[in-house]
Length: 421
Ligand SMILES: Cc1ncc(COP(=O)(O)O)c(C=O)c1O
Image (cartoon, rainbow, N blue to C red; front, side, top):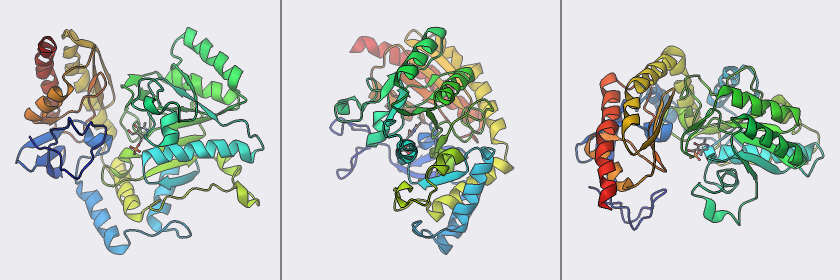
């Protein structure tokens, strides 16, 4: 097995214990070709980005063309065709609900911008008290400081920073009557101080793949509106088809003010993210008073190369029926993954769109588990208490079978390991 390079620092890893880092060489479709000539079927779409599979020729061609014309131009002062086209298309995808788009370079920064926008929205309106956020247990919104402050305060990897981060208001997702009443009480008590509610709609992904219903989402949206609180939807993980719809929050009764997009926006090629704001939010910044402007501007924001990839990715959503592919993946996950429910170490199995989750009672032998999947020719990366699959939408039947069967075969062996420790 490949050891990490001595000069590299990998994410979410105790480097002293990291003794296994597969070395990728090329990619195609759902496959990752390794330096050692092994092939892995990607069950996580490179952290949920490669929705069309790797190296889709349409995206590669568009990027090649853009690379020759203009890979980058600063957005402070300039505009360009790829970003203008992308902005109009994203606005249309959300039926003109969010007309103003601030492009950034990563999901965490899109969340930071959404948070800054929310606080400044109230300041620009003359209210300096509304600067806290209401966020949900099991949520994950990124690794920068503001984003960390709205993640789950206890169970997330950020809890060691708890004395340093701004203190937010954390609640359970209100998915039963008791929690709904509690939620309403907290809102009524704190609404003078809450700038916005922030939520990952329908699926809280990196916090352990917890699902909630569209009714719960509608309920939160209504409470936010009734109490004059902004509502931020973080669709960075759920956007672009993953939950079965183009966006998880595309529902007439869900009324939010800001949306964050990222990850699959460029079809898994280069980093680009976006914060979309409604006219109501934008109008509070649009003024004769200079100080009301949004003071933010990442160097590579609205990068033309990334925008050309995102435009090509949207072409593919228009030309090829990705949502049908998601439906087919969902059906297969329903048909086959539920077999895992009968295994002794398994707590729950759940499926939504192209997301299949096996939640275990207690995670153990995590490194063994990750390596075992690689030995079997699949890239599945369990964390917390979940083993999950989020494959590229173009995955072939036999490739998806291999992913699911690997979990079914590995789980009983993994359970036996518990007695060895
Ligand atoms: C819902 C959500 N928001 C924000 C982020 C952060 O995005 P990035 O890793 O691009 O900073 C993630 C990343 O997993 C995410 O899942």
